[in-house]
Length: 499
Image (cartoon, rainbow, N blue to C red; front, top):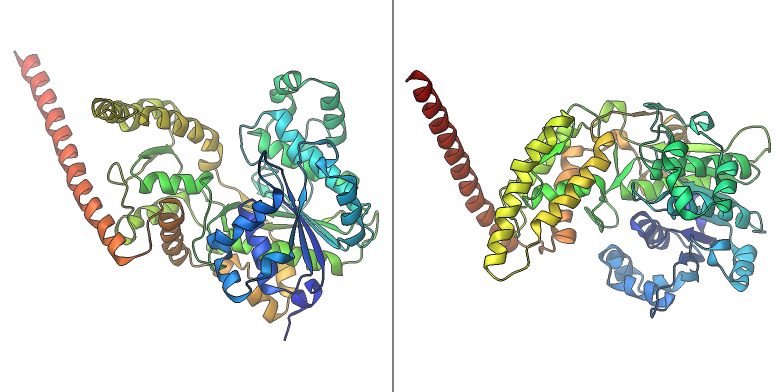
């Protein structure tokens, strides 16, 4: 028997932005696999020489859709691409497609965003803020609209450390209307030059423009059946559609993969700080539950602002960066990669002035030695360039790896409580019961398979174990050599001083 959420989504038409992204793919897959949704329109940016329909066709080869297509081979036929671009005026949607969406769509899930922390302000504003306003305006033309879910981020208000499920317009230097109006009148260069003054206490353009997007929802979308979903840092899937699925190297996953490859050895991380991580399938489940709940809630203009649902680890089942690091290093014996440049280890420091010196000895100096060996063998040197990017990324991630945030989830918990037992099972997002140890066992296997491109076979894992055994021996020999060298230098100094 269908659950309440399944009954609601049956025969509905959904419009999804960000559908080709990490979370978007999982939302689409879950819709097609768990419901009898009528149609899913997806906003897709056209690429030169590639038809937008081809962008959907290639999904048949994507591992995330493999379980779905085994049971429902025709499932992707319900997905219809809509040509558009969040950087363009009116989202780049043609008049014909706009009329189609206005007539048919009942549910909107707006997840399109640029997640680059160092994106130029004019780009981040266009994609994260202005596109949200344009989506709200489009939604107001939709004759059958029942629910609009705006996917934000739990860090949209990271200027404070205890974040409730409410709006925080007071932290903005200017409201969204003034910022967008001002930027429309300025050149891209002048807009970017104003970044420090505009973002204020926000650590980057991503969190700032996502905060502005929420201000757009509050100011211009409150008369719609609308809600905001704020997930913490989204990482590999826990259960669905396959355990450990991941297709990107953002944030913590980049750290996991860098450590597994033996590339990342030192980072500015406070091991006692809380890591705010959530599996991508939990996020997809909550996004659909938000749509269901928003449609059930009668909108009363002017009575209350749109509901906000946050998803992050609970206080009773939290995860520290130290535990995250330990789980990452567990992969050395559980599922090592076959392609490593050194034995995986990670030293964490919080003294910022010490990091450049430590990084020189841990990263830069070995990189020059490695690149010299590549050059002598006739291959292109590359590791020094890689470490420049890694150090830049660590600098960008620094504010989030050295601090803790607490996210109130009262409304999210209330939503889960009103869901039926069947829905709580089908659309699970219970962070309190997540077993982090078991989760990372699956996630590390997924990283090995989907990012490391190592097959999930016994032979491949045994090969990885042989490689890591050899690298461990080299690692300890190097440590012994360095200790002996230090002892010799110290002995020579003492002997010289004694003369």
